[in-house]
Image (cartoon, rainbow, N blue to C red; front, side, top):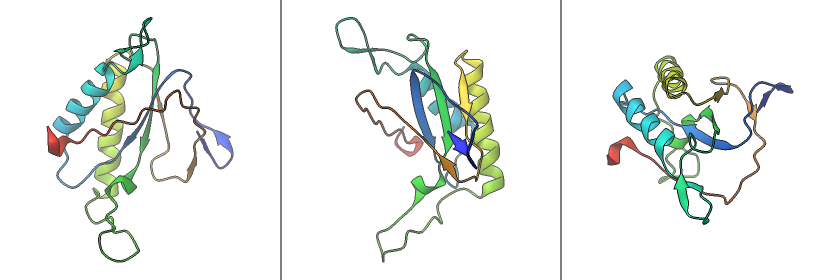
Length: 136
């Protein structure tokens, strides 16, 4: 991941997590999500079955703040981001989420909150899983 042409963060094997914070999200929500992300068995074992976690494969997590996940485009052609958390609080929650991953002993790479980032990704799969604390 780069900002202004400078590489700021990278991982080899692991997960790219796009984290959107919405109004009403809390530290408790971050704790639930990061526990789930660190423990989900979504990497293939020797038999090719999704049975290993990012920790099991010695991978890292690239954590990217992504308020556009809260974009609503039901009306009109321009998305509204009114449900996204205000930036100061969202940055705090993003940094808290990163600290939770680190406490799990998993290397974490971070983006620059609010920056225009360029992300290069090579997917094995790809596998995309949506986790939402509103649904827990």
